[in-house]
Length: 87
Length: 366
Image (cartoon, rainbow over all chains, first blue to last red; front, side, top):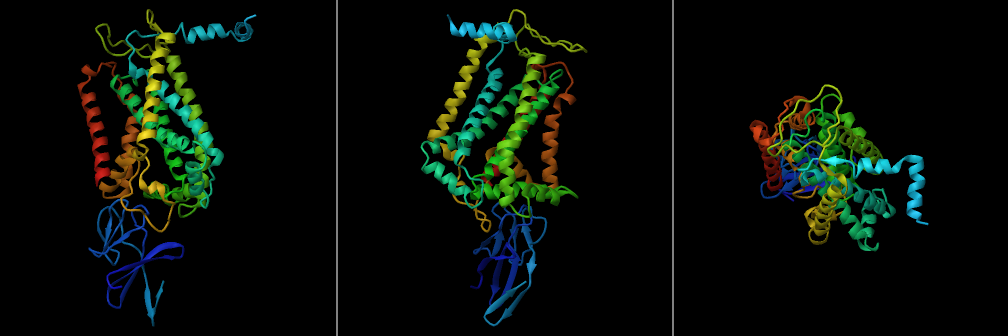
């Protein structure tokens, strides 16, 4: 879904893939870089919010505000027909 | 034949129990103006005793396994007769204990009872506060709820801000990279065995200090004047004072029953104050609940971690505050104990309380 996010397990850790624009996918480690909580996707603002200490990240994982010291880790995404290959 | 008298006589001939009881009860004199704030230590001993009793009963049915822990707590709450009461008394009791420890500390601060020669009494009391908090933190994880899991994730992750050894400390506390089975095992062992052993040793030392040095005279009334502390050991006597028993034990007991009434009142009518919705869902390592907050006594630390630009600064600020409190009697060397004659200290104390309350409210509503 365009503008939506899908959470999944990647190597045993929570990860998320978002589709900011049609055909464009970004996969990220969903663990907040502040203190390890799982970020939540905010549909209305199209960014991530950490429920523990209110850190905010853009759809590409960059820090927008709050205490997180660094961006969310990015995973490479490859489109293979109808499938997405991550990592 | 009076069996009780015979038993006491038998013990008295071997251990001198009559003399022991007299010197610690009827013959142990306290200052005449000793006030209700001096009962908080006894209240805490009673509350801790109840925690050990309810904890022991919970141990009968609790299963320390990530697959079974939440279910076992559900069984305790719903199927075991009075299981809900035992668990709520234990959970609410931990909060009431922290409240009374803080009140105990405040009374000692305002009456200047931490000052020399009672530095070790204060220091051991401060260690007991930290042991109490460690009991809370380790006990928090055991139900393996969403609240348990994420509170422990945040608390252990914070150690990662310590330079050089941060990651090793996290791995040591968790037993792996994430909070999981190994973490539950570690916290369970600490909660039911490690911490109680340390607790008994430190309580013993704290009570030894109290008894050995003697009760401090409340710094109030016309006859109170600061006195020079002798350089050699000196037990503070209170000739003409009131006997510990029955005069003071009655006051102690009345406060113990007041605390128990408070505990039972909250347990029956408002347990939700200390059991938020996130505590009612099983742990899900892939989903942090919305608006998750720590317990009220950790809110100030939670907010400090939010407002400082780096985790290390947030942690360091907490370390400095706690370190300063722990070592206060070694900085504050003056003889004066009357609050009215210590305006600077009382002002700083009130500002400290305001900061604690302000940060906690900010953390709660942010």
